[in-house]
Image (cartoon, rainbow, N blue to C red; front, top):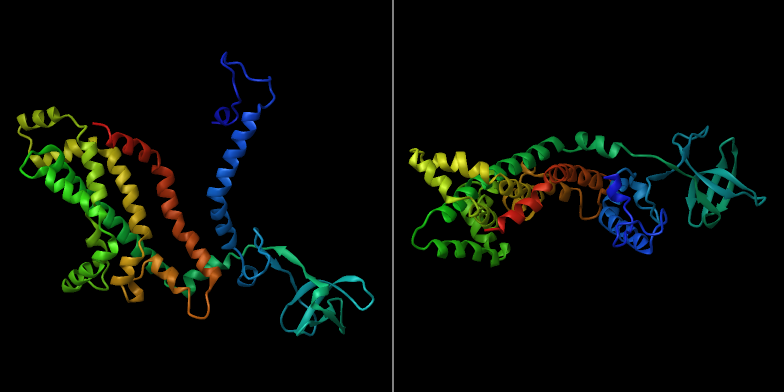
Length: 355
């Protein structure tokens, strides 16, 4: 990996250009890769750093990348710690002063070493004293103030069960459409693919009425069932299964293997790369789904993490420090799944298009 990242420009004879010096194309390449790295991961890093800021630090302007917060000091005679500023005193000297109170443009301050004397300072003649401090309480307080464990379990249950059912139903449909010859086979496949042109918002009302008639409102199964069969999954798996030789199926049938055994013992193992791709897509779809759970679920004990995130935003006040911390937590599972299984995406998609 290190050799790959440090490779340099080479001429046609395979000799490195200019010995150990970098060619201008090397500089352009590294600049391009660095710019792409910043564009892709810069917002994510900013989100992570912001999740460790206090509520007051998030409202500071101009914003900072690192979680800096204003330093406070305990002063004798005052119940609460006072914020520290670098301010000009009456003689024009710049000193560390603690703010007692502020009225308009005038701030009343004291020297922490001699708090008996009050000094009045214009707010334009002071500068906050900041220190690097990670507010880990943004994460730990989530479990005490909110039913975070319940929201996490609901999201995990919906995502895992829906992904398993999606793989099962889509693979069975793909197996029938790729390995069986029957009247209307192509028509059925075209109709399945044609559903991709229907905007999901159009079917929200019919789907809601069906779920309501089945008494699945405020039920996690009401979120799972409507989306277990996806045209994208059927198409992806069908295209991949077309590459599996029919001779394998015929040989299994000659050995008196049932159709279910052929599907379970031959088709599924050979279609594992495409199944992995669909599993990744399904996991991301279900984990990040917001609109359909919002329609089906109205009781807080059934909320997913995505719905719980919306609960932090009130009409008059938004708890940004908790919102950002919970957003980072919701990103961790999907990031881990993608990091460990992303190699199957390119392989599965490339293989699915080969016949």
